[in-house]
Length: 410
Image 1: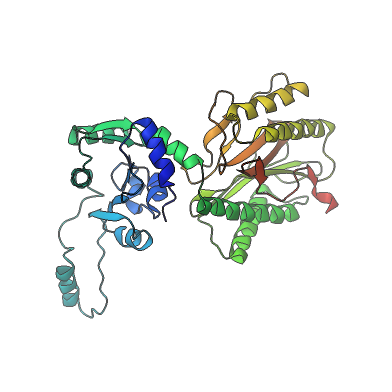
Image 2: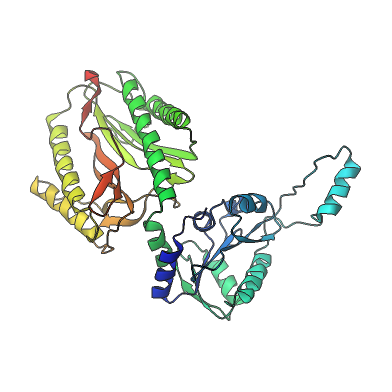
């Protein structure tokens, strides 16, 4: 199913003076349509897949996709009007065929023969888009495009091909739509967080003298995958940023007594990425490390107090920076102390907990709050949890303790 709240989309588009969204980014297509955009998106150009989201909530969603991706889109999103264009992949249903001659007959029956483009034909897609817009009464409309993704050359071609349309930047509308999650998105992020934390537990058990950083990464990944399998779901991806010891650039570092081990990790469920971090130590850390972690912990809780509907994202940043200043970190600066999470291109989604972000925190946003310190010669320390914003505050999606964990005590 589409993850768009159509009523919220209608309100946001009305406020922006937009009659419909025309989305080209693969992740935005999947969000809008509820099905993958297909392999043609690998080229990073606009046109491989296009989603049309009318402002009127009762109007049907539409998709322009490759003939290769169309069967999956129709299967997963039967509620969507689908139009197709040809790509380079030659694919045919040969059920029952026993000879090459019968394969030729299958081509003729299917009507899929003929030449194919090198990758995909952007002009053919724009022709289909023009037909769709005319039929929907949108050929002279104000249409929002996800310009934060759209390559400049493709946008110029789009404007030239459809000059009667008033093309506007719909990126802010799309951002605000994606910032507030529907129940299916929240469930994906819960599952992803659960798997990532199980991986952290497995990694912590693997920490001992002489173990190299890559082995810790492998232990984390195996633990996350095992948790997903046990939970009856699969991971569509995973990532980790693990550091061991005082040299933050040493990706082959070996664990030694007193080392800090920071793990900033996430797993993806249906393209939705969790984000969380914990810090471990093998034996008692230095006094300086303990002082830094104490300040980070205080800042984390100061920020958490500000995560409630009606507050600005900037208020979280302000509270955390003030807390660090109070604990003596006069020159410590962070561009942001966290962000939304979900199914965007990278791990971190807008809105950010930054100094200038006056976006208002709303219920059903899912955010990651982080308090990190990277000290070459000391090591990295980090606290990060994932939260669902509720009507009264924030519900933590994590269960592991946030403290500086000495695994030698385990």
